[in-house]
Length: 94
Image (cartoon, rainbow, N blue to C red; front, side):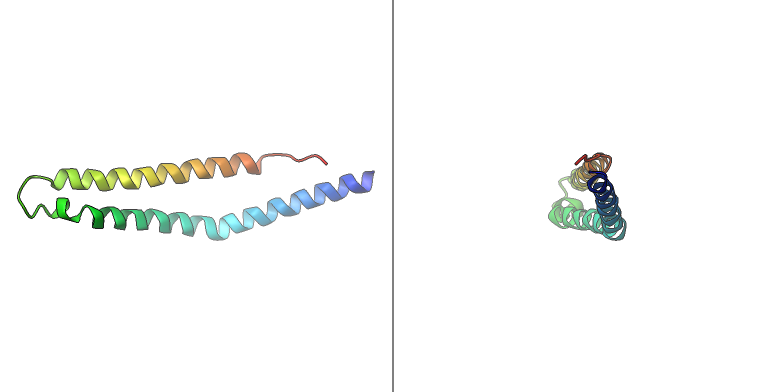
């Protein structure tokens, strides 16, 4: 019975180490790329409003749309990071 317990602890530690390595190697670059892509998509989708080619005064609205898009993505990434932190603190008993 002790061997099973020791094996469980070793496996749990190894899995946590692997997950942390993956997150540190790929998590930050992926999150950065997602934020950058959301800003680019926001600018492209609101380009007409930002350029204000008709002179209707929509530049502020277009910029605020981009800010809201990027802020939403940042909040979503923060929520995902919080969930990952909660899951990483779980202790499994076998």
